[in-house]
Structure formats: structure tokens, C-alpha cells
Image 1 (cartoon, rainbow over the protein chains, first blue to last red):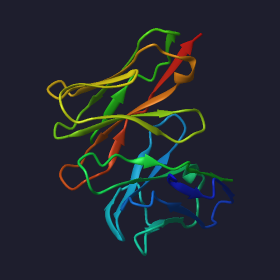
Image 2: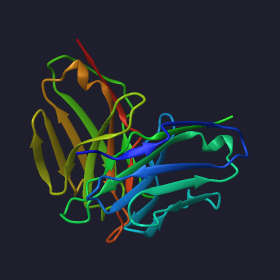
Image 3: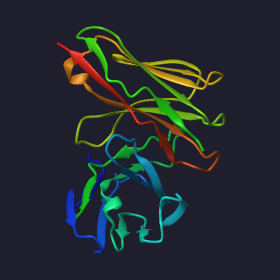
Image 4: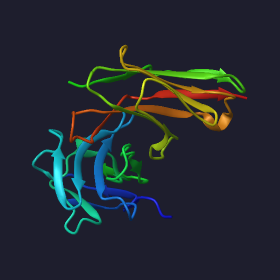
Length: 115
Length: 113
């Protein structure tokens, strides 16, 4: 049983460049979430998909951020024109839609450093 | 603004003792509550979930929920040095149809051998 996977695990980029991260959820989970975590803080919700539909977006998700889940399987998160304030750990989680608990399981994260 | 508050710690307990971690939340309609463990440099790992008032036990872990007081806690019995980590309290907020979690900043636990 494989868990949530994310790629790359680390990304260093220069300010102004675009970056894209990928998340593969647990295979039977149809809900997928993106969070961002900075040092000393808990994860902050960015967006949520049920299958291919993006159902919730945080105000943290500025116009420079876009997320997709085109076939309801893997998802990508793109950040355009990166800024130093975008440096953080980007976490993906997935959960099943059946059952009452909707527990979210996190992947290993992608650590982004913007120089 | 929906908030989840935790004491940042560090909380130090001797090996074999009970560690008690506390969390309060502001959104009265919150229905689902979770505890995650996060080792330094790693991602959060789900250890407990609770939905009803009262206690829920799983091995050495007990989660306690009091919705009237908007309070959730985690007890770790027979604490081990491997329990040393940051413990994140998370609350499912946003009402029906919303699945986003709001996290506290975490409590850093140190178990002293």
C-alpha cells in the first residue's frame, strides 16, 4: 500500500521563476488537498479537489498560484513569478470520500527555497 | 477568523510519564478533530481522530473532546523518547461541505530519557 507521493522533494529556484509540483494521492482516495507550511507554523490550507473539481480555494491562493487535477488522479501546483515569501514546505494530502471520518494523510512534502 | 490554539511548549516530560497536550478552537460548528505528529523536517503523520464528546483510546494515545468548552486534548501514556516531536491539533472547519483543516502552531514535546 503506497502512501501519498510528491515530486520533487526539494526545489531551489530564483525569484521570478515558475515552479510546478506534483502530487500522487493514495490510489483509492478521490479527495486531494494542498497545504503550505512555514517554519514554526502549522500547515495552512490552500485548495481542495474532489475528483477533478476544485471545490475550495483559500484566500492565500493568490493569482500566481494555480492547481489542477485534470483526470482526478494526480495533481499539480504551479507558482508563477516566485517570490522569497513563497519559500515553504508544500504539502499534499488525500482522503477517501466514503466513510464518515475523511481523515487526511499527508505526503512527504516539497520544500521550496526561493533565492 | 477560525482559530486553533495550542501551547507552543516545549513540553518536557520524563520517560514513562504521561504527556498532556491541549488545544482550543474558536469555531463552534466544528465537528472533526485530529492530532498529527510531526518530526523535525518531516511531514505530519495522523495519529488520532475524534468526533464525539468524551474519550477515544488507541494504544498509548487517548484523545479527549469537550465541544461545550471547545477543547480537545491528547494524552500520551508511558512516554518514550521516540515520542519527541511536534504535535499538531487540526480542526475541520468551514461547515457542511468543507473539508479544509485548520491547524494550530503545534506543541513541541520532549521526552527525557
